[in-house]
Length: 236
Image 1 (tube, one colour):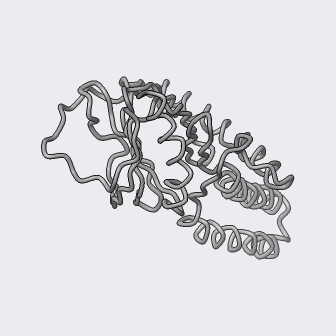
Image 2: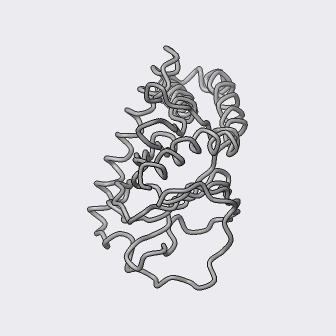
C-alpha cells in the first residue's frame, strides 16, 4: 500500500546486515572503472553546461522540479570564482616561460570549466515528481526512476551523517538503504514496496529505501501527495 507518512522514527530493531554492497574488485578493475567514471563526468559536465545555457533542465513534461543544490551552491561558486582569478595570476607569474605557462593555462581553464559543469549538473538535474513517478538525483552521478507502484511511503526524516556510510542495512535482509546527503544531511525518506536494483557508479545495488535531501521538502511532499493518494485509491 502506498502512503504519505509523518516524520519517521528510528526502527526499534536493527535489520540483518546483508553481504557486501559490491563485489571485490582488483586494482586493474578499479582503475578501469575510475577511468570510465572520469570520462563520463567530463561528458556529463559539457551536457549540463549546454542544458544550462539553453534553459533546458532535465525534468519530465508536466513534472514538478524540486531542487537540492542549495547546500553546495555557495561553496562551488566560491571555488569557481577563486579558480577563475587564479588563472590570470598564475599566467602572469609564469609568462616568461611558455613551456610552463601553456600547460598551466590549459589546466587552469579546464579546472574552471569542470567546476562550472559540476554546478550546472546540480542546477539542471533536480528531483522530479510527476504522474509517472519520481526521479531522485544526485547531480550527474545518479538518477533513480521510481514508479508510484514502487513507492510504499514518503516521509520527512531529517538525518545528519558526518562521513557516514552511503549504504546501510535496509528493511529487507538482502537490500540496503541508500543515503544521498547534501553536506552530510538528508531530510526525506522513500520506502519502497520491494527492493529494486539501482545502477550505481560502483555497480548494481539492491535497495529498499532512499534517504535524500531536497531544498524544500514541503514542496516535494505537496507535489507527491496527490499521486500517492491516487495510488492508494487505485488499490482499494
